[in-house]
Image 1 (cartoon, rainbow, N blue to C red):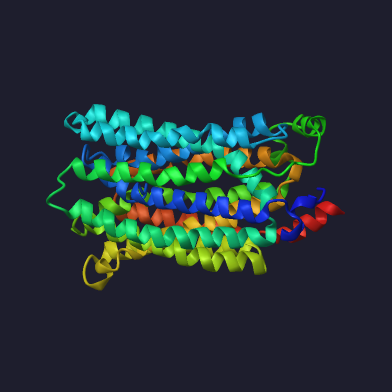
Image 2: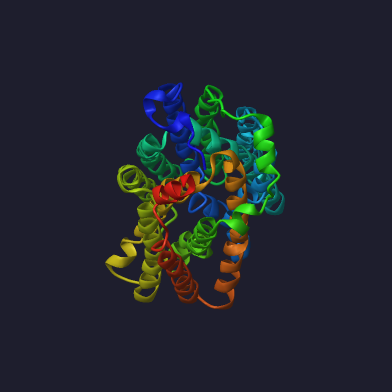
Length: 429
């Protein structure tokens, strides 16, 4: 793998400061917007208003992961030989207006027809996820070229801290909205979706202002590398295979994630307003972990972030299992800790797994690596639905226990990942 001269140092990276600020604003506002419609707490509780079916509730995570991950191999293949990736990054941003579509439907009274409302919601949410997934392949490639490695962890850490501060306020606001007698259903969720749509606007503006660095390659060169095949990274790169297996096993935490909020309501008898505290807990943890992981990634590399994040992925379902078995006392009141672990994992996903991938992927086939990796992760799209089925035929104890075992295997594999810098040195030889 040849060294990219644009990423050797911050001082030699064109438009580094401009792009740093643009990416920071984008990531921060996106994180704040997504706090309003957290797929781990707010959206499962929203779907619960229309159905008691665990598999249907689990579709929130299934639709998000499936529609975001699966199209990315095609996207990576499409843009890999393009000298300019920014037009493709901007092409999918229109999907963010779909949160306003859901809000408008709720304001208009479609909630009186549960089936129609669920169809509209899942369709809109799926289209948003697919458009954002299409955008993300170009986004990651531009990020890797615009922000040098030694500053990338800092950028991601700052964005997590900033979005975390905003997300704490969002969590408090969500709790007030859902607990307010002046905003009965569906007006409460209509307001939440509206606010999410508004928060996405600065993110779109920031992305439009990014100044994309030149690739330094000709179209013919990238086209020749593209011809090596879609599956070449998986077939020929053992580092990539090990990383993907680790990501899949850790990602199986989604077997249980959509059902934490349902478990809190049905088994622990916590009130609906506690959802706000879940959002705050997850957001605060993401903020703190983001700052810590940013420094960790810069100093020791992203594989240490992966290890810590994988350990946190085990802690979440393990603590939920303990609370379920005890079902009383302080452990019930400490249930937001489950969402603390989700916030840590969320930070580790970007600062660990994705940062590691961007470093071990060759510069001229990075879009294919990103697209293939996220498409492979599409195998997890059915995990929440499988978790819902497992819950219906067994119990919360079995669901949480199985999740712990599978994620623990991912943690063991994370311990064997090589330093990304060692991989880079090997590629230069």
